[in-house]
Amino acid sequence: MLVGVKERGLAGHAGRMTQPLPVPSPLGSCSGEKKPENNNQQRQVQEEAEVIMMDNMEKTEERKEKVQDLDERAGELKSKPFHKTAMKVQKQMKCDTVKASWKLIAVVGAMAAIIIIVAIIMWVNKESSPEITHESVITPMHENGITPITIGPGI
Image 1 (tube, rainbow, N blue to C red):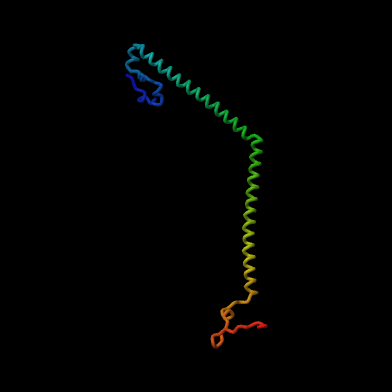
Image 2: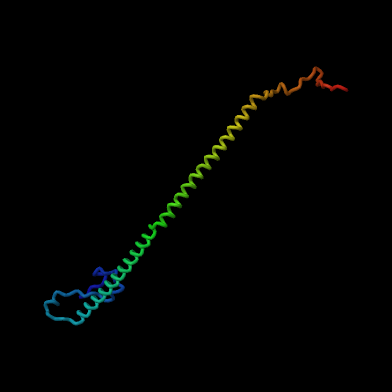
């Protein structure tokens, strides 16, 4: 009796294994008979398993080499020149941030000073100038409705 690849739980290797796997019959071992095709199938399955195992070992070695390469590259990044450059850039960024903060504080302070100075000037001008009312602007009229005009000397 033969069992298919999916029934044996080897669906992941279905592309490599083209023939179904043999399942030993309980009577086959008692009968004392050896079937030559059964041995050939077992050898073929064994060879396919060996090929798969060798492929897996090769892939494992390749991954190991890649991990070692990455580890070496990471070690190079931790070297002194990289660290010095990183610290220099970090210091420069901090200095730029402080400069920008001081510029912002100076601009806000200058605007506040200008507003205060304008307010003081307006307040001082209001206090020193006489108030203008409607009464002082309107010229009184005489009883005939003629406004007196002053004529300067020589006329």
